[in-house]
Length: 330
Image (cartoon, rainbow, N blue to C red; front, side):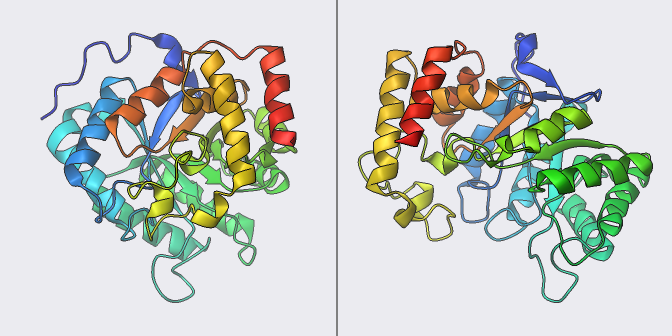
């Protein structure tokens, strides 16, 4: 059983209120999308998770399909919970999602009541838990009434299998509607999880305004563009990097010279600030008060430590923000 650091809550500002709710998330959360699957080293996964908790990272973000193989990230984290963190369960915020393909047939994907609730039961079994703290609809289902999808989330909360309902990858209009339905059902949406980074600014076109208006939290994923906003790819593609793995979502063709030129320019600005590029990218995401937490992935403990340190980096000046916009527009 792991004995966590006594100083894990020493920096009170690291915990941020999730919208208007009583839920708090750390400014840096650990996502288990990669590096916790059955193809990954379990000892490394364990070391990353435990170091995260030692640093005050209390939010561990999963989904039913995380792996590979799908489901194996939940199994890996379930072992870590059971063997190392069981006595600290009430300090942890554990989230999972359902919305992408998990099994054949019309009820193994998207947002039907049958799929969401069956998936949640499977996730709880893999995690070895009676409930998760946050249960997400992972994506909008265009062929299922939103009332059905939100009703399934509300049922998950009322049944005690989840404490909070949430959504991910919903656009601004659908987010407002989902929040209204959940509010009417008495289980308000607590957080939205969109993709947001220096290279993916779509949430700025209305979604962040909706999040603020609805009073919900915003936990953004891929704030480092799956490692592109680091120094990992400046000298080629390392074999252990996401773009170097057959099961990774970042493909080599996405790492072109035009994109790398922007990465180098951003890296130069980061160096002037005395910080790594990853820290600059996270500081930029967290500059917006509508963003509650940045969900990062890590394949090494050192990467995790660098990311957590970014939460306390110096604020970006207005001049630096203008330089960043100019670099991205080039």
